[in-house]
Amino acid sequence: VLQLHLGGGTANELSDAQLATLVDALQAAWRLPSDAEMSVECDPRRVTRQHLEMLRGLGFRHVSFGVADLDDAVQAAIGRRNSPALIDDVCAAAREAGFERIQLEVLIGLPHQSAASWRSTLDRLIAMAPDRVALSCYQHRPDQAPAQHAIDSTALPDGPLCAELRSMTATAMLSAGYAPIGAGQFVLDDDELAMARPEGRLRRNLIGYTATPAVPVLGLGAGAVGEI
Image 1 (cartoon, rainbow, N blue to C red):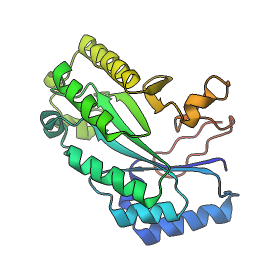
Image 2: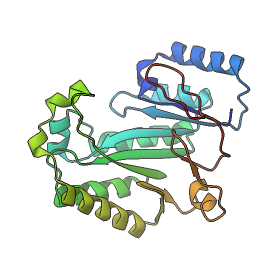
Image 3: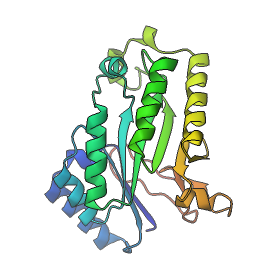
Image 4: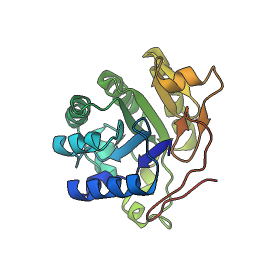
């Protein structure tokens, strides 16, 4: 196994004992070398320093935190409040726990986003100095995701504004010294993905961009998907 990704915020829902049992089961069933690329997604509102230390001790080296947007009005509209101070704290805790790479995930296309508010979010994001930034576009599909019925569709930005926000993001990240990787991924110049691109080793699978060889991806658990 070259990559192991624990996604969907699962790490926040499992106890330390459950996480240890899960990793033990994976190591018993698969050849999981010590240098495997092990990454995990965490909700910054729920993760604790102890949880991060536990995950690092289990072999996870990379962590991704879902930020969405740092504007108060946008956060209130999507019901996901996390202050810049909270993100700073969890990033510091992750580094102190020994995580080698921290990725922050942000979204455009959210209700009440504007060019001015997004500029402020980008400034705060860059000041946090994550190793990677992943940009995605919110897809409003309440029939597929019932929780989205709570979001006011009339407050969503239109296509031209979303395009402007995407362009602003690319300009800001490039100015801050991040290299663009594919669509919506920005990494520091010394990142393995930045070095893999000119060498022809950069690939994308269901987990994301990777410098590992192209191999099948096996999805385990509710809602998981695979790629062969």
